[in-house]
Amino acid sequence: MSKFQKHLKKFFLKAGPSLILVAGILGPGSLAVASKAGATMGYSVLWVVVIAFIMMALFARLGRIIGTLSDDTIIEMARIKYGGKPAGYILGIAGFIVTMGFQTGNNIGIGLAMNAIFGGSMGLWAIIFTSVVLILIWWRNDVYNTIEKVMTGLVLLMIISFFANLFVIDIDVKELAKGFIPSKPAVFMLVIAMSATTFSVISAVIQAYLVKDKKWTPATLKENLKGSTTGVVILAAISGVIIITSAAVLRPQGIVPTSAVEMGQQLEPLLGSTSKWLFLFGLFSASFSSFVVNAFSGGLLLADGFKLGKSYNNKNVKIFASLLMILSTIIVLIINKNPVELLVIAQASTAVVVPIFAVLIIVLANSKKLMGEFRINKVENAIGIAAIFWVFYLSYNQIMSFIG
Image 1 (cartoon, rainbow, N blue to C red):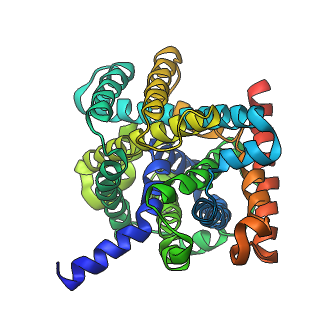
Image 2 (cartoon, one colour):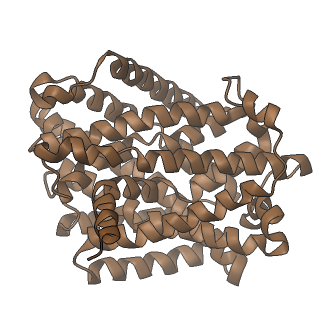
């Protein structure tokens, strides 16, 4: 093995959980929400990405630390310390519901892409790909390593696709700079959805499970944490870039995307008439890359909540992951809405139950017995508490929008 190969292997060993985080969060909902936000509100919502990035960086780091230092999972600790079996049930079910929202978005994304390429209904393609993935996950044994290898490649393709467009579009630098100053958004639903796509508390929880699968140890924690923000940086950067390209290309034309092809028009400065194909490929990649990650994350949380398994390779986790895929496909078949609008709703709906996980992570991160020298400081605590208020605020507004 060459010196370069050794360094590359070392990088992926550290950044593996971080890249899985990107693959799990960066789905079709992220693309749709960022595209629609840029087309609707221009650069004015870039500040949301910055705030979500700061919060996600902290929570993802805390998830990795907690997962490494504790012999128990996050849900086990909540069950032991704060509420017994009911606490486990609540957290397991809540996690399952959140990931089902993301998984519904994945089904919609695959349906949108395949419909634009080959025709056929969104529901039909959701059924086909759910069936294919179910066959694959029951055929393969080493689920985590398989996910990590495939996802890394797809994430890199997504990065190249959207960043290349920055070099050929006409950006209003003055408006871009103003976009980082917080202001009242015109469409609050999009802000909720944007926050959910970048600041995913559930993904921070999943980091605790991933580092256990990677067998991180307290002795190597400081070294391993050096690559801990890689995925969050990539995630926030891609969200920001899509908002910028959509604001620069779609908004001036008065295009508010309602289909995959219309979203793809933001890449026309780079590829002209062939732009839709690159976007469709990116949409499909984002959907498929997060398909298995989200399903297994939901299955893992539900299984752990009911003390039926806490590893990605556990049979019960596979069963619950399969159930999540099937249920999310049924939701797509039942709900008849504009697919892009449905993607936004699916992303925003995940904000409803995440506050309990945000509170749990910050409470655990303040435990001197658990965290030792890694216990969060005053600045991190301030960010964590602000994040808790933020997700409660978003959750309240999302519930009110459902009621109203």
